[in-house]
Length: 64
Image 1 (tube, one colour):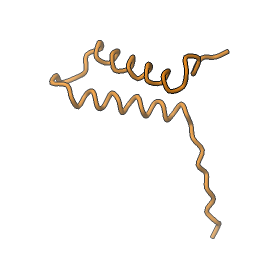
Image 2 (cartoon, one colour):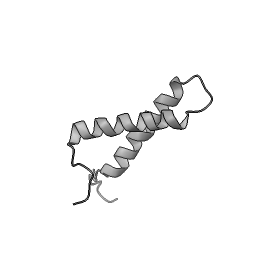
Image 3 (spheres, helix red, strand yellow):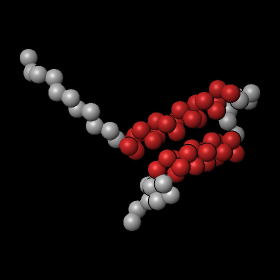
Image 4 (cartoon, helix red, strand yellow):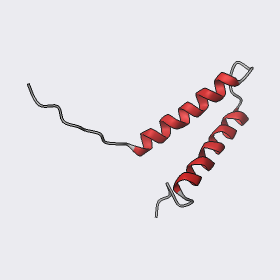
């Protein structure tokens, strides 16, 4: 049997996408309508972007 090695590699893009999905799921669970409106989706994603920039700085995620 092969020894188990730690392979804790973080894919920051995947983690960010998972967080965005979580934000949208939370927003969807609190809405009274059947679906989130495009405006509400934009609002949720804008708040997520602002939170990301606060945590990582204004230049984060931009190509040089």
